[in-house]
Length: 224
Length: 224
DNA sequence: TAGATTGTTAATCGATTAACAATC
DNA sequence: TAGATTGTTAATCGATTAACAATC
Image 1: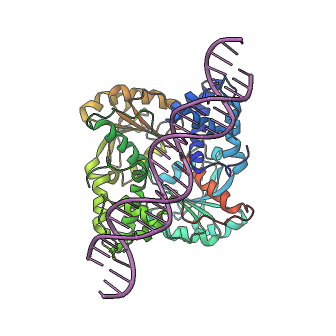
Image 2: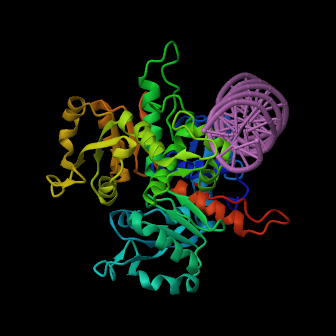
Image 3: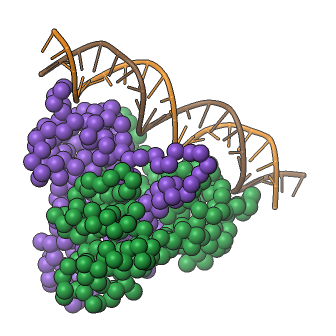
């Protein structure tokens, strides 16, 4: 009931979805929820839900999982006990959307400053983060103990900025630019690719709409 | 070499990453690439790369996969042969970022129109899509044969808009709003949750930075 | 030819499900 | 108490890897 460490990667990917669901249920005033209902919302088996929630929340037989308690527990695991400071580079429309996204704190991401080359953007403050000139990044990473770099620059500048971030001491890069970055293997890189989400939607549409001979119509369950 | 249908879900999730990589390699003028190099970039085994690419591109022993040919083939599988029309609702910062994202076409997503309740936003055109009043959505879905709804509205309006979309005939919802939607099981729903990406970065950081007794330092490979 | 790299199969691994005893 | 739902284990499934023959 402390961190992500002991969980499997598969469980870790589902945790934010559980969080989302518990938050929604909480807002709707539901006090308890069963593994069966959660399973339905996630498109997985109830037993897997119960297993995922070991070490997150304890359920009550015949009643289910207490929504407020589980929600608080998830907040601790994902956010409170797990906060990482980050710099975001590139204050275009995507960068601004990311900065404006209230709720990264809840997942443990604290964007302490944003950077851009455009002097017109420098000086403002978006979503609580000041926008600074990129030239100042290098000097601030170690001083503020920033671990994560969020890359929201155009594709043709991503490699350059990524290299600079890593040289400045950043340990992990969360890349939203549509390019493949080449960095030393010690650096953690995650390429966020919007195409992935849509490819899965598309795949599911094909599967359900193409009338394959004599097979069941749809596999059921949402694709999370 | 036609669609996504015959591929495994796991392969489908990687396809956009392959596409990205091939595009980057193409821009850098590389003519061929080996499964080993691709595997390194994706953090998977070379044999899995070779298996993924069966039905996508054919490699040449001792040479590798032809970059331009593989790229074109991926474009066909993901985009050309697979195009779905979509409506986007909610032209806030995220909605605008999504509309401005050149490259959805390449993944088969064609956003033909955007919708917003704010009259100030209506009438403009962003990323080639006209912004219309939400009231006009229902009448246009069947007329234009729109399959997909992209939800970029605030959380508290998402359920309402989603229900409307489904009643209008939309078959799949790609949801960027931070809420859990409740819809009939025939509807395909994908909840895009930015927390997932960051949770995995965070997980990897913990894994590598926490010095567990006598275990290997880092598992290596990027986390895609 | 020799050697590197593909395509493919069998073995391994991890994740998911089904079943059931424990529990409120 | 009876019944529903959890926690946990064993069985299943699918995805990944390793190995190797085929090929250029």
